[in-house]
Amino acid sequence: MEKWRGLEIRHGRSGEWFSAAELESRLLERPRKVPWLRVGALLAVCLIAGAAAVMQFTRPLQNSFQFISDPLLSQRDALAAKLMEADETLPKMIDHATIRTGIKHSDPLLTFTNIILLEASAIPDATRADISRAVIANTCGFPLARKFLAAEGSIAFSYADIGARPLMTVTVAEKNCF
Image (cartoon, rainbow, N blue to C red; front, top):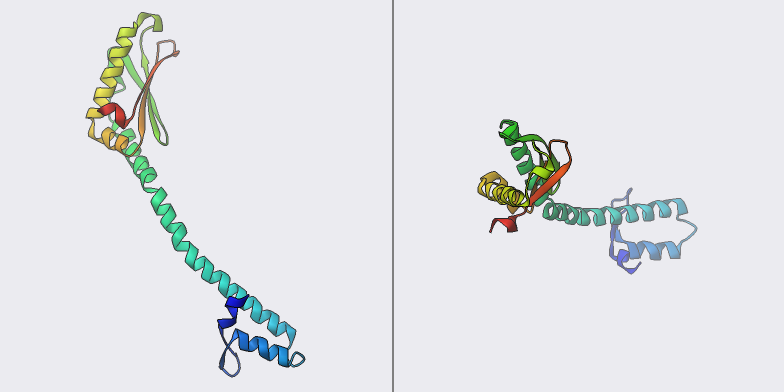
């Protein structure tokens, strides 16, 4: 309570300024002449002013914290929206055996879903490895996708077989592009 004693207070009727410590001494000298309701109100105003000062001080800190934590998130969101928009302009049939079926964004992952029009058993492991290498090379070579990866995002390409059974997922992060 020592810090509030230096606070300057203005008397409403006279306009005279005095310290809170002086108010305290006046109250102790003449306790019967000062209505306690006014003292309580004055102390309440002092507490509210102190709380307002604390809020003004912490608001910039909160805003700067948001500024520090949000840029990558908002950058990824913007880039994901552009990638999704670009994907909408492409044909659904990627090649003679692959159909693009959708996209979903759950930060930081952007997932493209596809169906390969074959049974899973008809796709050898070597072909899956070739698909994986081609997906990584194409993703890393696409400038917009590369920006998304640089913003600490990941892009996944999920493949299912003709029966919609999960076949493979290739997840590309920036480290895969080196």
